[in-house]
Image (cartoon, rainbow over all chains, first blue to last red; front, side, top):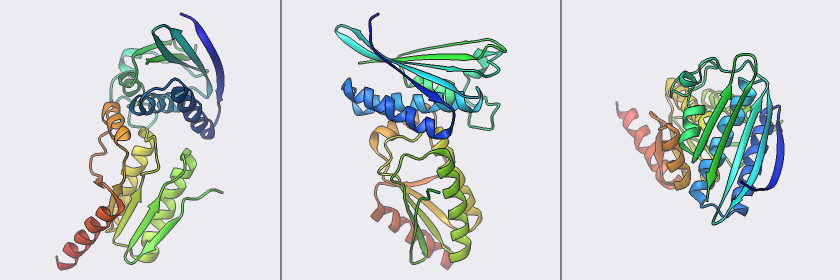
Length: 134
Length: 123
């Protein structure tokens, strides 16, 4: 799948979560995503960036613009340096939280995109990949 | 430090969120609002989010906390102006903002607050 553009945004503070939202919004606008799809993707990015910050001790987001005619897409890869998730299935459930939040981050983000994958192991950090197609 | 301004309109407080809020700004707003309710004896809080193009679970939770805190201080909260794309996204995210009153715009929100305050004054 050809990646035509790529950029990385570091996630180290809550100001970076805002930056993540802005970068994803700009790319989604460039790809002419509908307003609802833009909003869904930006919201998913915000949830995942905050996860990386709160549970993963920060990390980064890799943003890729995909061209696969006739469709184009945006792929976001969130990588953190945290303790990892020991039970991914449990972590995906709505309402499950270890951070005092609402526990909607992972499961909620999954519902807002077309493709979703989590790779994690205790001690090895977490990598969440989401893709939205247009 | 950045702050979101809080306006006083009679017995109500009016907050218009116009910036993409980072987390600290949201927490500062919570503190400022509860302090203002005490200082002014406000009966209601109106939060205009029509400029927000994203409401994630953090901001949703913040709105819910403000409404709960205000209720404990005898003030009602109404959130107004949510964009349709934000409403669609929030429901799919799984966040229904249970317990938060909403209205389509500032005018309708103020009417709701006035009606609520009048009802509680009679009671």
